[in-house]
Image 1 (cartoon, rainbow, N blue to C red):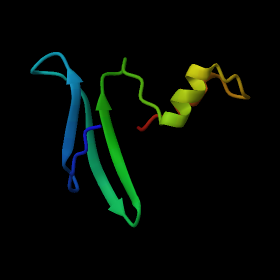
Image 2: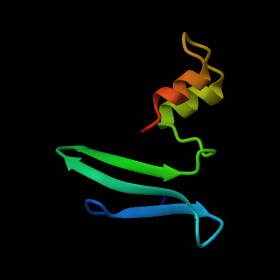
Image 3: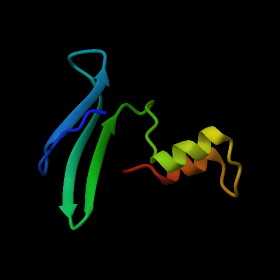
Image 4: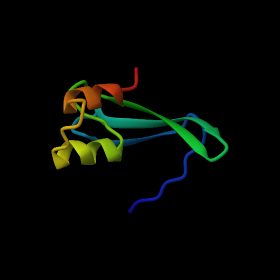
Length: 77
């Protein structure tokens, strides 16, 4: 596991296959109490979910909402 320290408004980049377009950029937006708010920037084709949502999708969970609805509800605008 890689552990990084970032301050407010600092970012990290994951992946990417060109100098022009990084894969996923994660920026620290807010630190308050015991919570950190992160912002994610990626191509529209990149799916980003919280780990518990990802696990439900890949476990085949077919609860009241479909997997597309679960993924859409976790999108950040």
